[in-house]
Length: 304
Image (cartoon, one colour):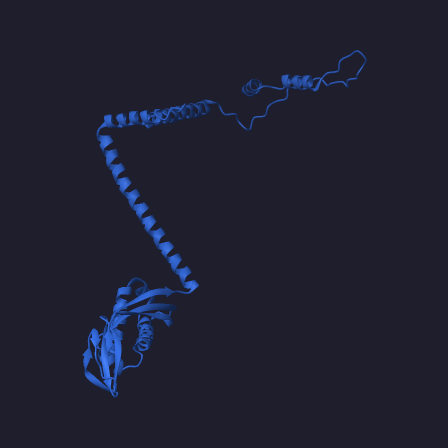
């Protein structure tokens, strides 16, 4: 008497020869002499693939591990055609994983794992389903271990990409804001009252902060008016100076100014005596300046 579970199938060998009937779940009777029953589980089994070092199509060295989900669909083939089918599935998974990784580049391996999983399942189905009676249900890549230098390069690339997107978004925001400001400026230019209302609103917003300083708008046109007036005043003063210079009579360079009739008296050497006050240099210089001929004396001498 042999008990077969619901998730099992019984395969009977009589004197080493396979019987065609496969025993289902329940209590089964076999001959005590010459019959041997092998029970095969038809549940889905999970098999982990150890990490495999591989080189991608773009010459990047990495380590990949995966997991395989398979089940027995033909107990006879699983027992007769292959010995220790879990180990055989593990070896097929390792070789197929290296083969598929070697045909794909790094970007595809990181971004399109569904395609890699489907390709890996397709490669493993060929030698297992028909000859061994096993069905590969799913193959999933669990982890991809990259070298440290490659991880740093990828992080720099991702950071640069995020910075580029941030700059593009900021520039787009500035462009939209400039368009809105242009429309607002055109509207205010057509309606002067809108500009006045906006100025008053700005004053209200500033005064709501309870500040001790109040900022009042000053029209730029008034500053331009004062600038224009200052330029006109400067031009007039420059014209007057030029007119006065033109009217002033020129003095001939060939005229010789005669010496004065009376020369300045010679200064006697002063002797400091007790009780007397010596003359200062300033008085001597003033006396020489008073005796020097003036311009009028020179013109009279020339005309005479």
